[in-house]
Image (cartoon, rainbow, N blue to C red):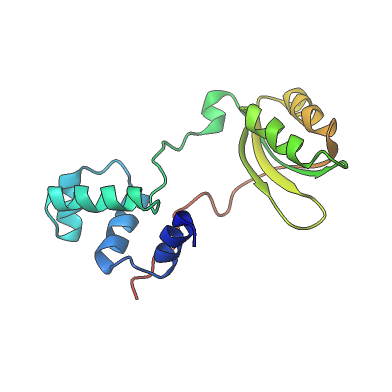
Length: 161
């Protein structure tokens, strides 16, 4: 079995203990907490917290940290879901185009009639048209404007039991 599959299977086997889960829960809620505050909340010393976080990063349980920004505050007043059904032999080109476009903040290859679904943030309808045109050269697009987000991006559910 390849090394990455072994490492990933260890994660899938639930080798995270209750303390790891509590630590991950706190980090999902606020990744800016200091090691001392994290330790206070879960009952560990700062060095113990640092060691656990390092292990969780090494094991790719924690993939990264980032600030969540408001697109509207940055002038990106329109958000859209773009679905793409690539033309023959264009499947991988769609992914490459999405990677190059800063407006596309999320792109997933999916099953079903469409092969890709992505989220884009743009300044205007005209800007959205420019983005769509980049994909239309590689297949059929379907676009939906996002009106609201009743379930905004959130952390994963962590059950200790």
